Image 1 (cartoon, rainbow, N blue to C red):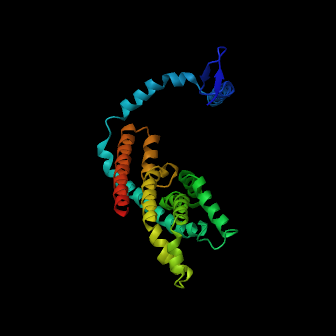
Image 2: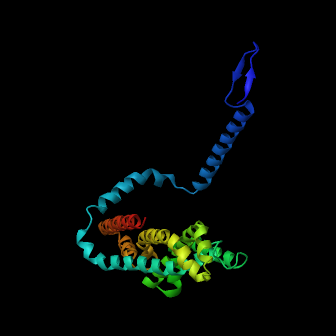
Image 3: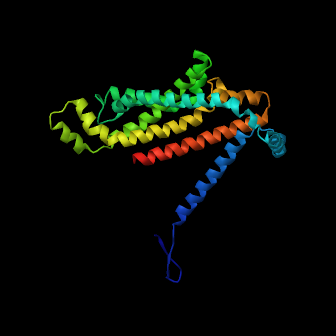
Length: 272
């Protein structure tokens, strides 16, 4: 802590030096200037008349959206089932592919840190860098509309999520157990089976259930690009400006997410 001396010879304790305070104020000034510049760039094409009218338009939209059309619920049962199947199958396929990739990406289990590990890490990063909605948009243009495109999109997105968390869990295992099993003359697969898998299994189950919970939320909107499920009904209702139906779909999505969150929490609690 710096000390200054007054003309009377009395020592005065300072929290910071004058130079440090000037640098801090200069930093804040640069930050404010950067914020103002970014705000101008983001709002240069904004039509402020629409912004000022937004509360009125939002209130009018809410008035037309309530009460929800509850007699529309029976038509949502099949799309809801499709959404759950899309999330479940996509999670299953993605997890099956992610497990070997995670073992190849982990520094303590990869057969080659120079060649194999970078390729596995690249696959994980590539999967995580593209949102499932973008995957679905690309796959619908290739495979056509339907659940298959949604399932593959969910799977491709899940590979990176599960693979990253799983390979990090593998790298954090207790190496003493690996050494103990290896000392018995066990093969590489036996070491994985008896020393590594038991340590990472709880984490793996938790990661998979957590990803399934996320995929239910994502699969509910993939129909907006033609991948089926509740999103398809949502897109149709939005195109017809059927706001009471939109509200009903939102209620169903909310209820589904709440239930999946509860199931996910129970399962994670049971395995920990």
